[in-house]
Image (cartoon, rainbow, N blue to C red):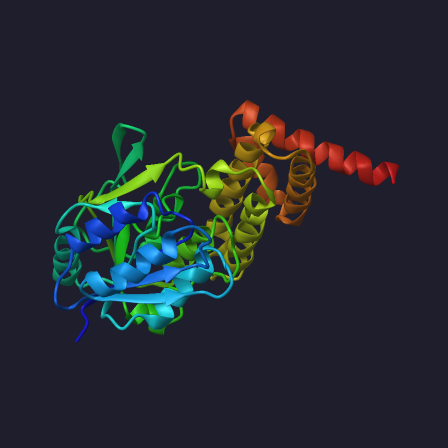
Length: 325
């Protein structure tokens, strides 16, 4: 019986994939499987994964015939996973030796639906610990209870799928799959759904995932239209939260977070291609128009001047363009 399935999507990461695979080898166990999803890579990644299928104990190689993006690749992994527990890793990151055995022992001891962990952020040669924004460790809680407050960073603002481990019952209940086709922010609707609908979770003080920042092929470094999928992702967060039984208390957090992300992108608009920058402004204005207006007003009033002013400018220009038309 497979105890743990680790889902690892790869796309054009031939420079980093060997490090990732070496770290998986240092985490092998007879009852672990590693689902290596090749998202139709066009560099040397497929050859690396074909060798890994032969050489890495527990490796299962799956290749997409068409590139689908990270969300779709993770879903392919979930559909092929047979383990009692699920973990994720990205194809350009790596693990500390023996990390998964430690994490598995911890979640089995706690008996909860999922656990969240800290991680090590790696930018060039610099290393720093990034912690789950939740102070209580090794204590089983209701994940719904830690979504708030709206004006502070909480566990839903730490969306990384690879920073944790998840019981298979979450797959069976439809809570672990990602929104098909999302190219970025795919983990935002996912983490919100987990916190609204799962029954139990805990935060651990383990930090065995090494997250590589500044990779040139990462979408966070590319200013093309795929970046705008964050709009679709957060629209989904708002729509699903609005249907929740506690919508009145949870929506202010969802709207404020959405506004903060829009403001962040507008504040870095120079890195986008010109036509994408124009689209970002128009889509951001339309997104704010779709939000519950009373909740939006409160969110803007609660933000610092610079971020709120940036959002109000885009909102005003949109309204002015509509009047002119």
